[in-house]
Amino acid sequence: MGQVKHDRYPRFPTRRAILRAGAGAIGATAFGLAGRQAQTTPASAEARLHTWLGGVTPKRGRVSIEMPQLIDNGNSVEITVAVDSAMTAIDRVRAIFVVAEGNPNPEVAAYYLGPQSGRAKLTTRIRLAQSQTIQVAALMGDGSAWIAATEVAVTIGGCGAPGAPAVERPAERPKMAAARVRVPPLARGGEVVEIRTLIEHDMESGLRIDLAGQVIPRLIVNRFVCSHAGREIVRAEYFAAVAANPYLTFFMRAEASGPVDFLWADEEGQVHRERATIVVA
Image (tube, rainbow, N blue to C red; front, top):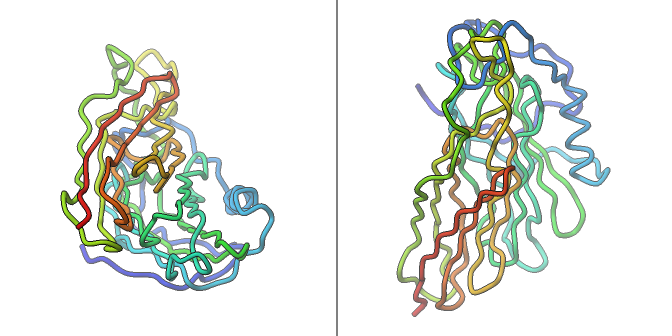
């Protein structure tokens, strides 16, 4: 399956029908709501972006989205978003917002980038219920906003897919297990380095139905923070459309030696911390 890079936003607001070829949203899913249709509309996705952007009307351009055009299974879809920015004091990205207008809830994630963020580029994995439009907006340091969108076709839905069968109720609530982080141990002063993270967690969406016909209560990792020597690099707010075992890659400008700290928290107060060290020569 090829990857297609999309760097133009086709419309805002969006009203045109999206790709539906081959998108039956059938079979068992890890993020399904049996017998129900997704309730999100383009208008609700746009309303969420409007709130996140503080009422600023976004312009087309500067934002790019890279993900498959045809998705076999919507349970875990890799997406890379990037914003054309020098990431300096006078040209930087403050936040990146992702919505999926065909999911049961439009919010996917919100990312807030600190001054030490060296590049406005993120990769994660998300859940998609059906063929739909994904929108990504960026809020800049000067108060402007930019936006892009792409349409994807989903064969088997992974987020509130219509007709998803009931599943056996898990024996226990999701728990944070091992986390994995990858930070270069050595960097040059001012070098922009990539950081990779993953936390093991089932991300129960609150949309699945058990064999008794009851909704399995939601429990997701809803917060992630990475900081270097006490300065925040990136802070993420996650929603139910983030795939199980939340994965995130991002970039840091290495300015000084010191600890790189990671924190994940879920809705029931479970917290997991990791620490790595980078030496800047």
